[in-house]
Image (tube, rainbow over all chains, first blue to last red; front, top):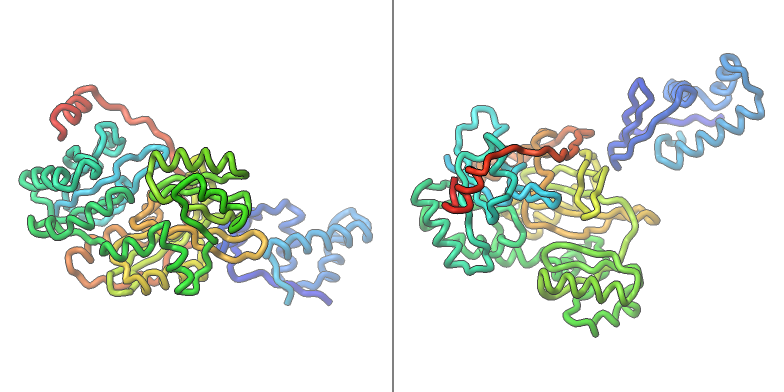
Length: 84
Length: 344
């Protein structure tokens, strides 16, 4: 069960604006990105996030699984997330 | 207290004089007088209302130290200057050489020694960094076009061709290198520095050393927008421990006595920081430092006055600056006065 955490040098505002204070880089999350990121911050595992999104949104599981994996990969690549 | 400041050329290649004065004026209950010293009657800083109390034109250092000193002596007879803060690279050697003479007529400075100034020169930086375990791009010094032939052997294209004081060009082949060499040698003299090109993001640090190896303050900034001239037009404070510790190491090793700016590049491939340059004065973006909680220009004034200054421990992260081109409206009378009388 994969669980991720938010790096200490990342500031995330309610609007989904992210500021990585060690590099000065900024990023913006869209609405679904914000929802997923909040679930990560709350300590949910990928499986738990998947279940919640499937419940709240009209999306099939294979698509969600693929999109979620891609999203996590991007967050990790930009150092916006750390594997616990 | 009367403080004279140079570098009021707030143009698209801005000097640090205006932000240094702005930092001082931001100090609560600041009751000093600011004397602007300009080389050109159109330096924008003197046209900004409320920035300087008086201004005087001074001769370029290239016209001779005696000439420059005589003019400052004249200004001092009228104004009784307490402290002089030179802010431009090209004039620093002259003011460092004049330190004792200035002191003799009652003008304090807070400057490095000639030796310290030389250590961080663009032509000496490579050796200093190697000796102190600081990562620095490879470089070679050239004084003739024939020397440029060494580039493919010792470095690869693209390479960076830099003037001894200012300006740099990224060149992709021998022909471009020759053109850049010609431009820079005419303008800034020799040697010309050929530096390894490193692709990555630029980061800068503004810092102040007390002359005993201590860092009084240091603020790190990432450039968010860079002009065609390579000038940071927008930036944000960051909390990168790596470049701050390198900056403190430089101040400790050189026992730096003044403000300084350190320019770094973060290699995109390796994520390693390379020290590109050490500028021996505050940068044009120094106002970001007081805005983030470290008024380094005012700390310099206090050090120059012999006060004990406690080092700043922290600063606000995520504080931004964005430059703005803003037309100042003036009158021909003002231009006439500074042009004809050399003072206003």
